[in-house]
Length: 217
Image (tube, rainbow, N blue to C red; front, side):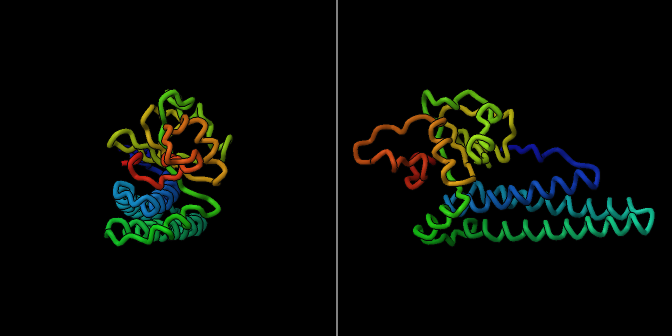
């Protein structure tokens, strides 16, 4: 999958903003990789780490070239301090993702407990006749309506990481979302009804809580 962050930033400001966005996405993807034991998410974290490394190198050079006075140098020193801290965030996210890449795994019970913290990560499959089908993320207004953010979208075997407002959601897509646990119910309503299975109660629909991997893989 491609990312809106594949465009190359040029200025100190653009580089710093891109680094901040990349570090936030890396954390979300790293936790998602661990919660759902999903190697593709872990691989994207590693790709973003390399991108961050390249950007940090460019940022340091650009910052040095941009300083033309002691005041400029002081301001750039602060920028570089922030950039270094962002780099540590990215490194930590990569450490988390390597649990999946190294196939170490964590106990299933612990995985569930971690995923149901104050802010949870969930995956939701868009079903037939879903209100969300065919609409863009802007149309869904998930952040304002439910506090949920779409971290990634899987369509078949293809991933879209850090999707933008104009990305369209289609039947069969799986959304990786993050936010308050109560927000999952809102997304559930937009994604369509659970398939009827006599053995499962509606509260235990696999597409919402991701406990059964058949709807995900």
